[in-house]
View (cartoon, rainbow, N blue to C red):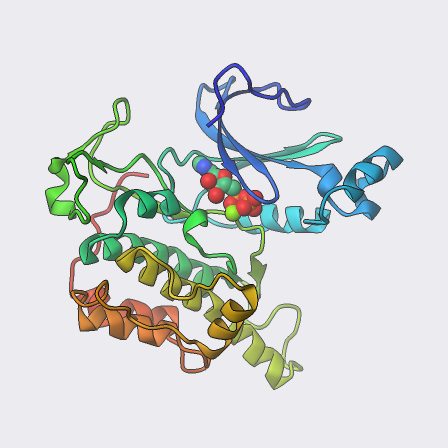
Length: 331
Ligand code: ADP
Ligand code: MG
């Protein structure tokens, strides 16, 4: 994280004091900040316009700047991300608090997730116990259920970097650190000063940069069409939700063992492995993990999207229902 006092100054962001950099997305910088009018701590996602498409960037010098950088996103995508986030209100999804722009930047003011990425917690803990993994994935699933069933939105970029902890979870303090820790043993951990509370807390879905509305909210029909929709479009829309279910299978797999189901140094080999759905429950890491957890993953990492679990099937699986849902927490 960048040292304090070295924060960049963005024209148009005068009402916010930037405190520290929280994330380096491919498309953006995200800062912890204070809204100077309310005193509220927030996250601000800053997207540079000159990285947008040349046709949108306008001025010539911006175009030259742009040519040095990859064409990463389009104005329409930012507006879509904002529009989708505006319609969303769920405890498992990061809230958009405000959106505005300057000539050079877009600013998304977001609910602050102090605890950072699930990705970093996996790295810290090596892997999660089944109870802790369930606690995390159920929250993600509730957010996905809301998006799929109530909003007609497919996220399309579910991964540990886009799943954020509301506050810093406990960090094991044992030396050497324990490989696993359970929620009910959480007092063995050490709390980061100034954070307060205990346990692992809420996990929320962030980054709607690739998300897409597939169903019309009012009519619950495929977007923009009523009655004349071809079967392949209807199937397409249905299957597009299943990309989130595949990704949830990858996240759950990774939570339980500490490494992803599909990996290879070569992008070509990796692509082939994914295309064939070639993964294994590698020994010895998976030896002690329950058959029920493996059964659930098998129904998510299933190449045929028609066979893959839907979010409702996921939530009804014995591995999920066997244990109590996480207690409701203040948001
Ligand atoms: P990108 O589209 O560039 O991936 P993200 O929205 O995923 O942008 O943000 C990039 C990173 O910034 C995230 O992976 C996370 O580490 C951090 N981040 C994003 N939103 C928040 C937030 N609301 N609170 C805290 N950190 C955040
Ligand atoms: Mg991201």
